Length: 442
Image (tube, rainbow, N blue to C red; front, top):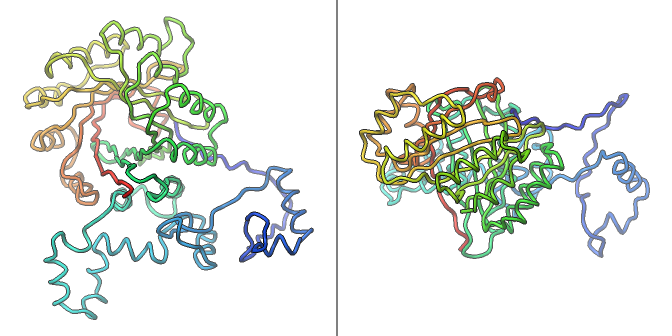
């Protein structure tokens, strides 16, 4: 379903006055808090009145929240006013300069060429690795984001994407030696994209709850995350959002860990009856000796039915035997089969690594089924793109922007009719899983 921003709207007779009081923020009482020492009774009364009517919130005015590099960067009038005035987050100040240096755009400008000259440009180009090409994973995500026309600046979807990226913890908040992993999933036509970042539960959990609560997620879903997290207690947890060219905006959490399937199913909506999709899937998996879930995810959308994804390795020693198990699942859960073309291309390739099955369920039934094939050779990937509705040049543009040399996996997916909600493609689609990178706190 489309992820809907909850505006908690209210009506007031005009006029409405918007006042920005520079230097007046929310801070503990103390000798350095001039506002508190002044004891402005009328100002405090306005705040308390707003809180009583649920018309009060706090916003960040520093760091990534206003387009600056990190939470160690102090805000100021200019960046705060710019962010408030345009109603969205965009790169400002040092972050704007840093991005242009990291992507190399800084060195491609006429000003650089005319001021510094060709000699310095040659030195930069010959550096190993080249100056301007050392992008961290966050920068790769931002650069890759620029490939998608539907994520254009000024749209609701762009604001959603910016808000999600800004909700992620900076690397400096992690303990030394801890890591964050970045990944993107794109459809073969590049009109459907999933963005995901995972890291330590101790840092990510609160960030995820805060972001999705701000986006209008119901308290029942926040409680679900807390309950499932307490039950499974994963080391790492992740946040993801999905965007599409047709206006789709969804998001949720993910546990990228091995979990007993009997525990994983507790994350899903289930009636505990034999006709329930989650119970049918769990029974089928047990009968095939599939006992572990290697990836558990759930959306935190405002409106039900919420969806839960399970991924697990398929039993079997080769492509054909694992494919047979996947096709059995498709038949059992009444999904239409995969097209012959991609199956015949993959069957002729040298695929040695185990494949995974992705199953998505909700309270109403089965949502999607996917066959995830890791590390497909690039010549086979090219063959799939050319013969299954994609364009090599479009995929290559994304690879250049993200720094990826090849997809980490290919997924053949079938989305049940009725679950596209007018914003996602129903039926068969091919997805590319991209490993953007891992950042570790030194």
